[in-house]
Image (cartoon, rainbow, N blue to C red; front, side, top):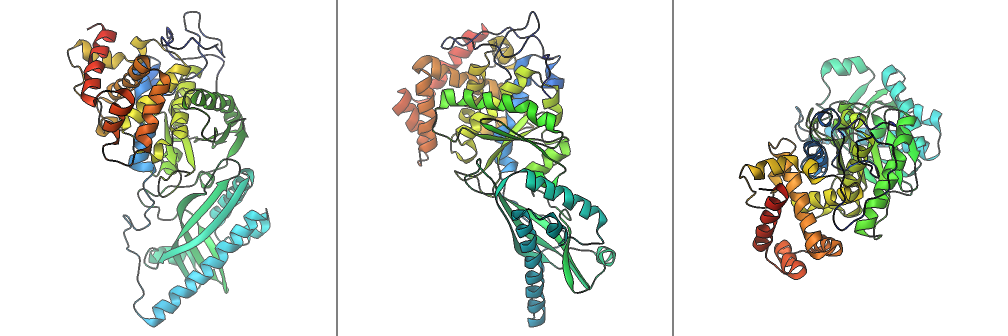
Amino acid sequence: MIDEQDDTVPLPVTPPPSDPPHPTDHRSEPDQAKSEGGHKPPPVAPIVKKVALGLAVCLVAGAGYAGLRQIADAPADPNATSAHPPATSTTPDEAAAGVKRAVAGEAVLQKMADAVENDKRSEFLDTIDPKAAEFRASARTIFANLSALQLGTFQLRYVSDDTAALTPDRQAQLGGTQSWLAQVEVSWQLAGYDVKPARETLPVTFVTRDGTTYASSFSERFVAGQRRPVWALGPVAVAQGKHSLVISLDSEAEARSYVSVADKAVESGTKVWGTGWRQKVVVYLPAKQAQMEGILGAQPNTYTQIAAVTMAELDTPTVGAPVRIVANPKLFEELGKQGRRIVLTHETTHVASTATASPVPLWLAEGFADYVAFTAVPVQDESAAKELFKSVRAGKVPATLPGPEAFAASATELPQAYESAWLACRLISEREGQDKLVKFYRTVHASKSPTGLADAFKSVLGMTEAEFVGEWQKYLERLAGA
């Protein structure tokens, strides 16, 4: 929850030359600068308490986009690393048996979807295996979650099955006349927020007993990279603001506490980017690290140093795909109000600029998101770029703009990458004006040419990338006092 007291390190705040300071929305420590609220690339709580903001900001802010590209947007592949490849029917009898399984499974799924659409809890539970006590309890929670989300659409589609996926012991445990594991595509649309439905692939275990087929599990044999819907991970609480929908796996109070922060993040993003987007965001607040990893389809501990990630909840990151901001529960809990605002503003900028489906280089996507966040919540350069300035003063001036590998969550100089990208974007704004920075981003984003970035440097900024890098290097040296 957002506390009244900001527990991050006191930060002297100075606004960028082009923007006056924004009014504060919270009380701060006597020696702490007032600001509108949190950061995008946040001051990481545990890390930020004793470390300069710049480092914390980078560690927390960055993987929102890089992590998304590498993991969260990867299509769920039900066959990826399964110990048993999907069985193929080779005889007429096997083919006929496969058709019967598909028909029986699809009938169960249709009953489920109809029950959700018609808000019929008892009918939904009628599709659940009466002998699967643990799953029946989960099913009650899932139905309650789906009811709370105010869905525009909800569909389940039988995709394929794998007759070898269930071990003999598991089949014996299930009992019945037959049991099998199927991959099911589930799609749902949040009314008022999604242009297209979100889609995931669920492994659904079916069992037939006494002539009736039931669903017996939604979680058997998940494979690497397979994401899990937030509504299948535990009870959710939902809070709605003017521009935001916050879905929490923690508590209703937790969800409500972030609504105003998310609303302000949307307003800050719109102030820079413009009104040509939906001006709405959906924020997921997991209660545990494992839940965040489940939502993203990530390996354990991939995002331990990342405060939030922006992800497209669709198999392909196309324009119009439903986009979510997923918070890291541990780091978000420890962030102060200012840090949370910075993080949400950064990630909201990714949503506004459709970064999850954009060809812009990572340095521009991340640098622009930081630019918007630090414009909304001004922070002293020495704090926000501490690690980069340290390197520059040691004679290690970046030779080029940071490449995509520099933004990997495991990169050794991740803070410097974010700080470098942010100051590159700020230099463009100071040199040409904020409108030109936005135009530069939009031009690169809209280009379908492999030379789109180079073309934008010439057409929008009137220089080559090499000329810009030279100016940027001098800019960094001047700011660092090197």
